[in-house]
Structures are given as structure tokens and as C-alpha cells.
Image 1 (cartoon, rainbow, N blue to C red):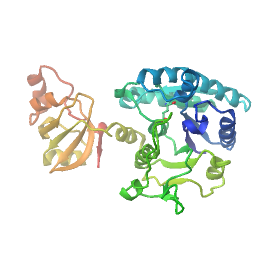
Image 2: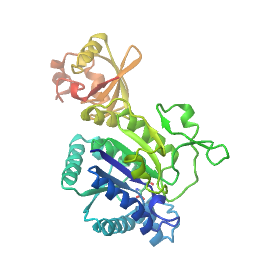
Image 3: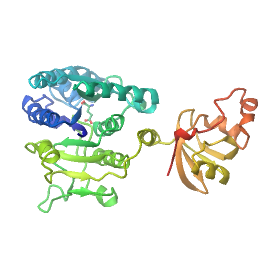
Image 4: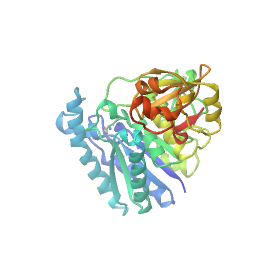
Length: 362
Ligand code: GLU
């Protein structure tokens, strides 16, 4: 049994004006039903809310402002869900809607909560259908594109594979020319791989090959296999997953890592500052101890309590973690024993700067 995230792009489910297509839902949905019947668990991440809304409110034109885009998502999301519900009813599969914003990743309790909800739904054989909560998303809490959302969903749900169904059936070298060549397997995402990305002009969807490659990078780092498959390839999901046919582009995952560590990887993706430590602290961290103020030599950047930071020793990044103190507070308490924290600040957030559970060592 495998736990699989399947992401469906806007144009894999809607026509060019954003109208959701029953045929497209049926082509993908039939495969999902078969994969479930074969004993796997599936979580769908579906785009198309903005497109479906635009087809109703703007005659399929691309919404130009954030407010219009959010209004389109509010109209389109229930349209999508009702189509999925109708389709899967035929197979006796109930569906559930999950709308996420990125604070679900930033806050550990929300992360665990989302995981528990998804686990409960899967254990009851209900098909979760995830989208970004576009209507309330502002920059600070945005996943931005559904390729990124799909990887985050795969991490939250501890999935084995993240499959992106796209109108392009994989990553190509020289795409669109006579000599185009599908890249079958990617072991490492380097400049050469990135040079194959072709940027497309604006559309009803947010992603593109670049967001897929960024998502792939995150995914394989967290030990989750990542696949770009053509949504128009007949029975592509079944042929790839069940018949092991050579389709699409597979990004080979690095080593599997523990769930808590995956969350740390996600959350420390955009560090807000640096903490420079001495040798004593470096050795302590290597021995899975917490980082104490005594070992902090200096701080750079501006971060708040709960933000991700880089940990630097001898000019090298040796790890990342979640700071329990802000950069301003740390400037006051660095090089001090923990027993001085309360004297200096007038309060304490605890003896450690970064708890050992909140550190990943490179
Ligand atoms: N969440 C958007 C929607 O449902 C799609 C974002 C994307 O295209 O990546 O329309």
C-alpha cells in the first residue's frame, strides 16, 4: 500500500476558459478510483478554483487584481467540489474538502492537526481534496502555487509519492523543437536541469515548469518521490503506478527522513537570520544537545521568536533551527549563562535558545 498525493493542474481539469470539464474529471477520477481499489491511499490536490470562478464571473478572462482572483476562487471552489462529489459518488467514494494556508506548516500544532484530520479521513476511506484557501490567503500565509501546496500536503500526510498531473507530460530538453527529449529520471536538480525550464506567459494557473522543479527539489530532499506526468496521457496514473511503465519524469528521493525532521526542513526553508556559535556549542549540537546562550557569539538578520535561523560555525552553515528568542533579545543575552536570561530580559522563554528537538544538523 502506498500513500500518494496527486495534484491536478488547472488546465488538467478545466478548458482554456476555466470551465471545469466533466470528461477530464472522469478520465482522472476513474484512475484514482482504481488506484484506491488496488489498496492505496490517495489525497487529491486540485487547482481550478480560480479558473472555474473566472469562467462564471469574467467570461474566462484572467483576473487582474488580488480581490478579483480571491472572488473567483470563492465562486469556483464549490463548483469544483460539487463536480468531484458527483463523480466519486458513482464509485461509492465520499470526498472531503481541505483548504490550507501556509500557517499550517509554520505552526507545529496546526501541522499535527491537519495531519490528524487527513489520517482520520483516509482511515475512513474518504478521499481528501486539498486546495489553497485562496480567498483568505495573503502573501505571508500563501503557498503561492499548487505544486508547492502538493509537496507540503505530501509532507503533512507523510506520503510516499507526490505526482503532478500536468498538461506537459514531463520535463523536456529542447521542448517544442524537433529534437525534444523527455528527461526520464532526475537524480539531482542542478543548473543543467534548471536550464530546461521554459517560462510560459500568464494564464489562469499559477504554476509552470519552474514551480514544479522547485517543488521537486523540496520533495526529494524530504525523501518523497516526485513525478511529473501528463494529465492527457490515457491511463497515465495507472500505467505509471501499477504497470510501472516508463512515463513522465521521476525525481529520485534522497534518504527517507523522520516526520519531525521533515517538518523542520519545511519550516526552516526561509531562514530569517543567522546565529554564530562557538566550538563548545558546535560540539554540543553534534551530540544532540540544545543551543544555549553561552555558546552564541553573534547574531545577524532580524528575526522573531519562532522564526527559522541558520546556525553558523566557522563561517559554515552547520544546521538550522527555530529560535525561542528574537534577534534583539539574543543580542542582549548572548555569551551569558542561561541563569542570567531572566536578570537581563526581565523574563525568560526557557534556558535554551533553540531546543534540540527544533534543530536539524546539516
Ligand atoms: N489554488 C489555485 C486554484 O485553485 C491554483 C494555484 C495554481 O495554479 O498553482 O485555482
